[in-house]
Image: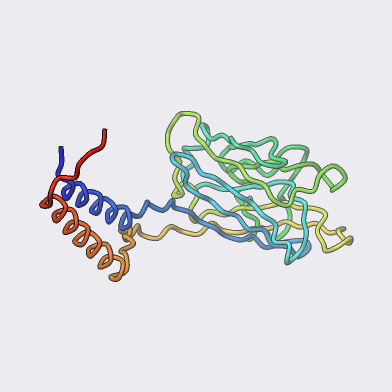
Amino acid sequence: MKHPLQLLAAVTVSGLATLMATPAQAASLNFSLSPFTGDNAKVDVWLLENGSNIDVKVDVDRSVALADLQGIFFNVANESILPSLGLVNKGAGVGESKFLANSVDTVGKNVRLVGGDSNQNPCSPTGGCDGGIEIGTKGIGKDDIQSTSWTFTRRDGQALTLKDFAGMSWGIRATSVGTGNNREGSTKLAGVVGTLLDPQEPSADVPEPAVLMALGLFAVGAGYTIKRKSEGAAVPQTI
């Protein structure tokens, strides 16, 4: 059995280790899409590594305009992932999806991203994007999807990383664009996923010197008290 002073020292060291430990931060990327044709709008996208999967969140920037998401199109840096790519944890309105290199410009019920400036359209001039996902239904009579999410996964069990998507272009088709009760517009937007920075060594959150000093003084003072008690007379026990 450990001496009480040894136990106190162990607990104190454990507490310091807990204070100094910092969990690894999950890698993430976010970017925005703006119109290459149609009415003004803005959509923000977040990609987050979650184990071997990629969580995706898509959100219309309502401070610019309201918009009903219809379809999301994207390209990948690693086309070898496409045959096994799948969606799980589907959020609001996430429907049919297609994944085929340079071949997807229409998804679901004729949701298309063709048209506009071919130099800005992520699905041109090669003939199509690598993937497309249908969102909701046309018009706002049945739904009005302004935010949704899903998780990219691989059915072959291999891991996805942000490198599979970094630096690649995305496109979004949206209808019922506008503000207030005036939502007669439509738009097609494009944006590019950011690139990953070189990985940095995670930095530990070191406690403030005052915290360390207080813990140290507490350990020394408590240890001295325990030692003094152990040197004193035995305390009678009542049974």
